[in-house]
Length: 348
Image 1 (tube, rainbow, N blue to C red):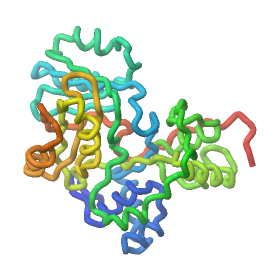
Image 2: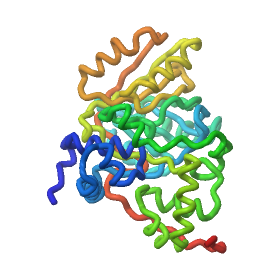
Image 3: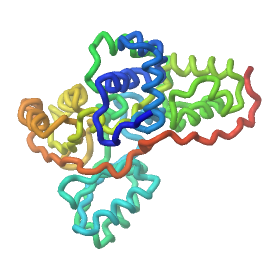
Image 4: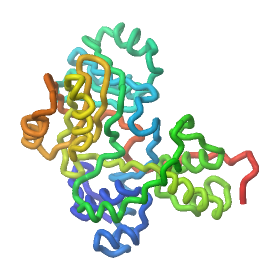
């Protein structure tokens, strides 16, 4: 079957299917078809195309903290470099495992990145390596203090409220999910759960039979544990798709200064805005960072001139992303994760 260009905008149906997967990354083809008003065969066919060309992927989104908590250790980096040295610095950052996100702005000499680090530490990258690099002309870093909105929570606005409600899983009962995260997925995981989550990391739509085959656990055990994880709200998925494929080619990074008495309300207002896919309170003179998608610069101007009015913002810098150099996990066809066979006795 013919594959669309990597830069082409997805059809209306495909965009609605992406939005359905954002509501529930493991939604069945039958349920998605019922809500979207198409046949299950059509949904299965479109999902197959997504998997072949890598345009849309569903992955497990690690939950690093309870809602509203601070980051487990992350810095926003704003790096300016000598013109002509941009690609060299970008390549060096992309190669680092502690750098999950790298964006290049349209200015041609500016990089935005996120670095994982220990809170309060003198990170070698920030304190020694980047400052000593002659190609780097300036470096700003800001610690994430509070999360208002994560990219995994952003929803493409092409479904009605009733459609989103019909597709969204029931919320876990109060106290069902762990509140003291310590494992790699934000909760304590036993060997079976850890094995399943690792197997789902690059393809969160794997069924129980495939998971049983790859992990070596009985299918009945896998089904039971998947149902338990879902009921606890621990199968958190994220849809990976280039925003330009959704008709949103403009991504803006926003660095705002907000008076302390407006910080919480303004951060929440940004989180609630349909264009915003990330909003964080941070250290530094720009105490609120946000990122948003727009169909064009006219919509961006309307957001800046109208939607942000009255929110207590005293200063704002806007940078437009020209190129996304790294996203972890990356877009593209899923690469099956190698899953080690469990060494402990398996429950039947």
